[in-house]
Amino acid sequence: MQNSNLPGAELLKTVLEPLLEDFQHWFTRSRNLLETERLSFMSHQEQSALLLRVKQAQNELNTVKMLFNATDKQVGIDMATLMPWHELVTECWNVAMRFRQEREN
Image (cartoon, rainbow, N blue to C red; front, side, top):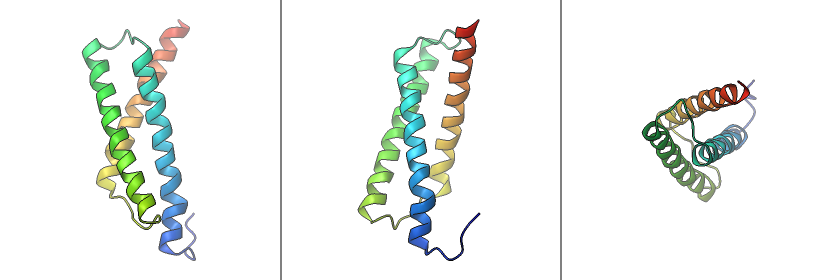
C-alpha cells in the first residue's frame, strides 16, 4: 500500500530502487544460466538470441541505475522501459523452470 505522506523522491527510492535491484538479480541469474548450460529444448540460435537480449537489458539497466544514482534518486523510469524488462524476466523464469524440470527427469 502506498503511503501518501512520502514525498516523491522518497517514494521513488522506496519503490524504484528495490525494483532495479530485482531486475539486476534476475538478469544476472539468467545470464549465468544461458552462458553456462546447454538448454536442450532450445536451439543454439534461440539460446544465443535470448542471451543477447539479457545482455542488452543489463546494459540498459546499468544506464538507468547510473542516471538514477547521478540524480540522487530523483528520476523515474517510463513504463515503456520497464515492461520489456518484466517480460524478459518472465521469459527467463520460464526457461529456468523448464531447465530444472528436464534435469529432474
